[in-house]
Length: 300
Image 1 (cartoon, rainbow, N blue to C red):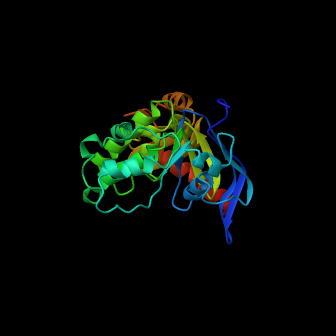
Image 2: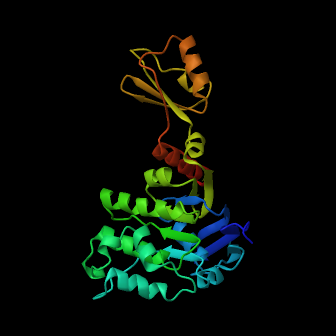
């Protein structure tokens, strides 16, 4: 069915010994979405991806891709994956390797098209074992595209790449997504999740901690930062102003995290406390730290 979601997790659990790597995850990814799994090391991202690709079976709950078991969707060529590990193949060219992999699928993408999408057309005749790290990562991306998948799953795709190689990779990924395909990638680079995902799912301790757009996560993590100069004045009472959730004093400057910046600024104006006022959304880093800190506080 065309209306069937691309990915569904239903109350999914997976443990390794005493460690609950995935702990009751409920998650739906719609067709055509680009979704980032964001979390610290050990948050459960790689385990979730393994369950999604049929590399592991859940202990409880269910995982389905396009309404079918993950292994069935993978065998049908509907899913492509780029995992963290991968060694270069000796004495074959980029074109030869992509063509070889494409022949294993029932309805592959034309090799020239896969090379173009991955930004490898000019490197098609070069040996795979003579590529740079960024170029080799694009080859892995082309191999994931070879079966003409409707969903592509990327596990930490830009780890150890320099800035230029990362930008080249994301250019290639956006070209694939623009065709209406579904992309799910895990990352611990907050700026990548914010820049390239329609939705960000924050995992922590094997659970879904937050799920929304970058802007929604920033609001959930504290909304806005209101900062101003104390100019020798007192910071007493700032924590009790409308909307304020935390107060930080840096030298002679106050930084108020608030979930209602308008109300906070109006209250400051009433106190005649506005000097050098700045209002800005919290950074993704601030939001992430705030969200995960709450988890630590509730579980400790």
